[in-house]
Length: 83
Image (cartoon, rainbow, N blue to C red; front, side):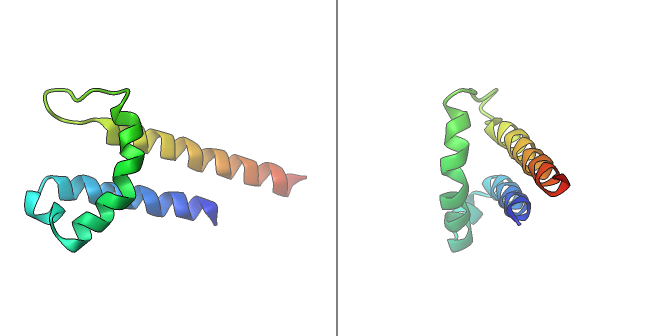
């Protein structure tokens, strides 16, 4: 169940990344809602990873962390079920 939440959140991050390419979209209700969900998480990475050429790469780090969390949850589930 928790793995699916991480996957859904990863999808929301993808939607956010796509919406940032369209300035008008970020001003829409959907854009503001997605930004409220994603920006606090991405700000963690923005503190440590500077933008390159004006392009923020914090989303790449966020995807990597979400992937590691998903894999960790899967491994933990296998360990608990295997006992």
